[in-house]
Length: 454
Image (cartoon, rainbow, N blue to C red; front, side, top):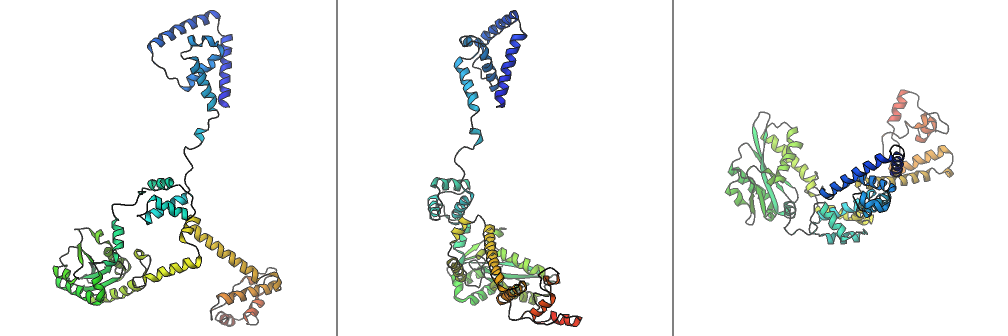
């Protein structure tokens, strides 16, 4: 609308200037000059491209010149002028700049689910992922899944080059054991050396020994002690990861079973033995940096106690928060029991809730709604006076959450002390506790605080 008004004003101003401020002789002379200049420019200039402002100017001037004379006056053909006018009128109703090209974007939750399926199942192609999404009730085209994976930097086709190092080590973890040394400085600045083993599959830690002189013979003896303690399980390990230290001699490698392959890490490459290095870091952060070691015997006792905690009580991220000495099948059976009891598959939760926060919020709201219904039921108006209804609420709470014996009572500091209409008075509170009249002396109040309520 603003463009149209400006265009009309320009036309009126031009018409007024022609009629008022110019004489016939001056106009005729100027026209002759402009025509001659136009003819010269046409002979020497090539094709001229006009900006939108120039097109609007020519179009406005066509209103004052007969159409039969356009070809001799304007540097463009009449068809071009008409095309400019049509484009100017069409731009008023053009909405192409107000919308984004292409189809609407895929819902983010669907894209996140497709990417998660691809990363957790590297052997699946986009066709298999599309089929899994269809099973979950997600309507999406195979080409959309292909585009989602490409945008996430994931090859839509199954990986043909083999698994990554992480996937390979995870699959072979049950047959890998790693070994390494760490040093500890005592209070008197004596340096002690500790030999530790760790199983990749279960993250079970084995304390080899503690010494101030880690010779090759001593290291071999610790390997023999480990073989004796593990018994038949020692032959199940197919790979032993160690560094290239002089402590690990050929005799140390010979202690291993016949089918065990010795994997030597590169020089100054601790990440090649990352699992054992992480164990050493855990020992330092959780134990050795917090205790002053007095000597070899003290260090051995501290490490033995921590080994018991590490293997029997400490969960590990590398094995899905399980305990090394726990039953791996127990946690899986527990998760399966939870799924069977809930009658909801995890993939359904991924589809219904965008994040874990939304799932927790829905769970809290459901619990709050159930608790509200329970409170409304135990305090319904038909149970008697307001005081009796409040007392019935505490009776119901006692039946559900009170242990056999508890210290104190939930009512010593209740709102009954506040004088508001309908609130239980202090004597009603003490009568509910079965204590009779309200205590007045300090000794009586002290005895009340120690009272065991049932």
